[in-house]
Length: 76
Image 1 (spheres, helix red, strand yellow):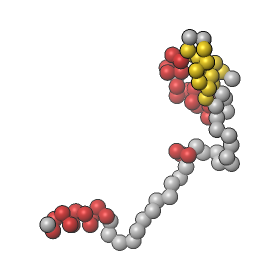
Image 2 (cartoon, rainbow, N blue to C red):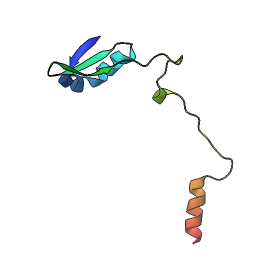
Image 3 (tube, one colour):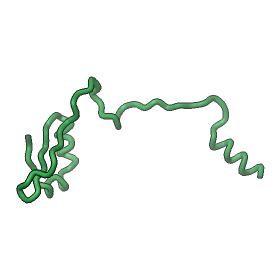
Image 4 (spheres, helix red, strand yellow):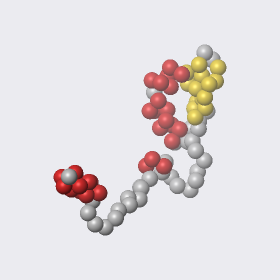
């Protein structure tokens, strides 16, 4: 477990989160007191975090909704 100060965490947050993605646990301290611990999520069988997963795009056959709305605006 790596221990970092709150100031260092704010300065190097991106690099520290990359370390967490690689499996490391980070403890954040302020005034020598632990205030938080960041650890990787337990493996759910999927290697990608939820924000990086491919999403399903839903679509309906026919004219786009934006076109229908603009058409309604022009007809009134």
